[in-house]
Image 1 (cartoon, rainbow, N blue to C red):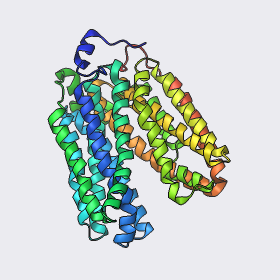
Image 2: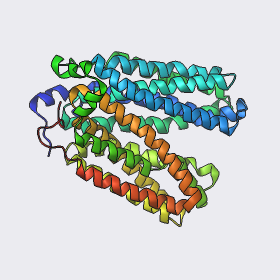
Image 3: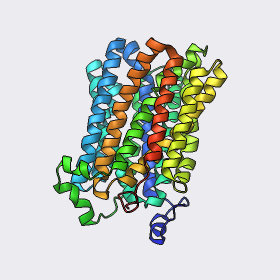
Image 4: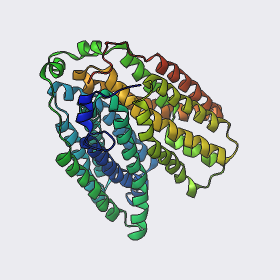
Amino acid sequence: MRRTSPASGRAAAATGTGLPRAVWALGLVSLLMDTSSEAIHALLPVFMVGVLGAGTVALGAIEGLAEAVASLTKLLSGRLADRLARRKPLVLLGYGLAAATKPLFAMAGGLGTVLLARLLDRIGKGIRGAPRDALIADLVPPALRGRAYGLRQALDTVGAVAGPLLASGLMLLLMGDIRSVYLLATVPAILSVLVLARFVHEPPHPGPARTAARNGDLRADLGRLPPVFWLVLAAAGLGLVARLVEAFLILRLYDLGLGAGWTPLVLVAMNGVYALCAYPFGVLADRLSRPVLLALAFGLLIAADLGLALAATIAVAFLAVGLYGLHLAASQGLLAAMVADTAPADLRGTAFGLYHATAGLASLAAGLLAGGGWALVGAEGTFLLAAALALLALLLALAARPRSGGAAGQA
């Protein structure tokens, strides 16, 4: 069992959970920004096709390009955070840029403006991701990282649920005026930046421990990342591919007879379980072996994939979707904690940049696997293949045991 040192306890005693207020503030920032973003994105296909007259090819191209840009930006921002030895300025820039894009959607008169807004929004997301996660590692001791990342993931997922619900409510209230909904959706984004600026303070950094990355080249610094970090990264990537993409979970339920009007409940169910369980799993990550808990998380993913492969009824498929939510709750904050554990303190930004970039590339691979597998071997075969990949991720998780005295556990 992991124990918190007296110094760590004093540093984190600012809240009843043992976490500093800045971590709660970062979680609230994520909640507010995700509420704004998901409210906009929930209506974006309808806005582009129904209001701007775009085709599905343009819709897919804009989304694909936006995600590709975000993945590259994540890697660069993490590296820059290490070279500057500062986190908060980049986090503030990323959230500020994303907030500034929101009114552009409401004012868009053509696809060019939407493309610009999506690219800037994704660049903002890419800029903030790795420095934010590195900042959380700086704010809490190793023994509290599981619950810190679990809390942020839980609040972020609450935003992912609240955003579409907000969009639906405003559409009813404003009689389908999408542009007005988009303008109102900018309010939580602005609030997120204000909370970040006012309530999140970067801790002082010890000079020698945080300046090594500023003087080394990228190849040398990558060589300083221990083998266990690369195992965690490989497990994360394989696990994300094994989750396929959310659209195919919805398609599986639709194929089993779920009506089109009820398909949004698939994501509500998954994200609801995710939001409720992310923090409790984060607490477990601070008390149990993290590699063993990660293996358990991939076991849940195997069960979810097998459930959707073999499901003959909508009820069974919804149970499998709930297992997906449990897997996300068990794995996402835990993976972030393990990245922080296994990377040297002065390379955490680079490590999180690699982690987020890997996630972006794995999402692309998951979409290709799902689409190609669906066409070649059908839904059942695709989910069985995903379960096999999840098994490989489970084995990598069990192998990711840091050696004592290594990078793992550095504060």
